[in-house]
Amino acid sequence: MYPEDLKYTKSHEWVRVADNMATVGITDYAQEELGDIVNIDLPAPGGAVRAGEPFGSVDSVKAVSDIVSPVTGEVVEVNEDLAASPELINQEPYGSGWMIIVRMEDPSELAELMTSDQYERFVEAQ
Amino acid sequence: MKTPVLREIHERSGGRFAEYAGWMLPMDYGSAVREVRAVRTAAGLFDVSHMGRFDMYGESSLRGLQNLLTNDLPRLADAGGQYTLICNTEGGVKDDLIIYRRSYDLYYLVVNAANLDKDKGWISQRLPTGAGLVDCTDDTALFALQGPESAAILARAGMPEVAEVRRFHLADGRIAGVHITAARTGYTGEDGFEITCRSRDAELVWTTLLSAGEPEGLVPCGLAARDVLRIEAGLPLYDHEMDEQTTPVEAGLMRWVKLDKGAFIGRDAIAARLRVGPEKKLIGVRMEGRDVPRAGDAVQSSAGEGRVTSGTFSPTLGCGVAMAYMPPEIAEGERVQVIVHGKPRPGWLRKLPLYSRGAKPADQP
Image 1 (cartoon, each protein chain N blue to C red):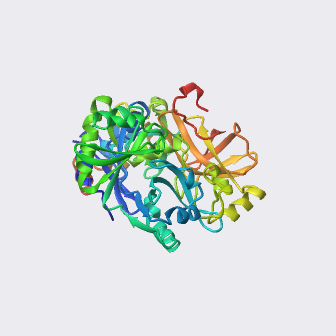
Image 2 (spheres, chains in turn green, yellow):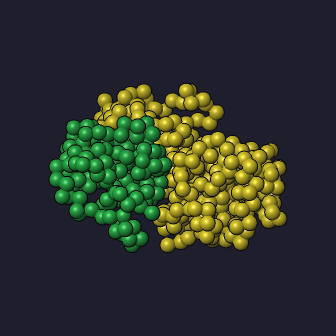
Image 3 (tube, rainbow over the protein chains, first blue to last red):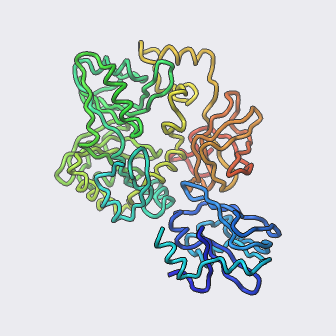
């Protein structure tokens, strides 16, 4: 039920890798748990992100949650559509709801992340 | 942890539960934003059975209640209701509630769930001879039918006479063959009814209302939508905008405090506070963008710092909104910075409420 071409974190982010570029978003499980996402705070292109550290936040109606970067590197692109339409994260968490693209410094960090099967088992245990 | 009588029904409707005031209650049924829109444009149905409900009876009820409550009870005729406060001797707010007069010796009170036991103790200890208090919370259910289509839905459910019921008045009637009491009030800023029925009729009343309202767009709504709606409408919530250390002068609730009605608990302290002036002032905040202020966030203004008491994203206005306590000399219209999730974000101080029924979006403050 979770896309097999993605890697996953325990804090419910996903990453899609092409060469040394990593696209990051939050999982379908995360958006479902949060409910309606009404606001998002993302870094500007050029900013640095570190694996395991928050790089932004999403607001649901009831609470604000940090989004944690799965990888270390430089933000090369930010999904500008989310500022006006954060509900895209609810509607298409793996598609138009993507958040940032990171140029990875150390692709070996990806080995720490979960496969779709592992993430599915992780979620079932929640 | 207490659970509502209709827990299974709510789960089947997709209700997602969280803890509030010692209860596990439906927060939303999938989308709080959709529920807010339904209430503003059609109607929503809330199970608010966790709220405390008391009957006060006996010849001395009026005398006892006049001493305990800030509003002036003799203004009510039978079937009339009013918003009122219970204050402590220092003038701090112990609770806010709605009281209805059923007859000269019978009153119906709806109080906050979180304050039920506190209120019961405070009132019981101060009852005059010839008055009694009955907690009827467990024996009854309370549903809020809110939104512009509410009266039409209740009519279709079998109670057309509600069209004639005035705001803050109640009427007894029947739907689906069982007795209900419908009071024309609510906590959303829309027209609507708060409907009391017996616990054993709760499922029948809930499902009857939902099916009667389906063609009008009625949806079940959770506490998250209820919180958004009341913040948009500038309605205070206990422990956010008021508490035992805050008097009605600060909370902007003096409309419901009748200092000239005679002695009541808290009167002297409130009158004294009114003479010296409030220490802080409750005001609305409208954010420039979608940033969502949360309770406790700092608000920086020219007159000094204040604090958000309640905040949310307003689907109706399309921006972040809040209520905040600010220094009393502050003026509406001022641009402020709210420290949202650690970052300063721009907003404006605005008169409450931020949303008024009937006003066009462009005319909202």
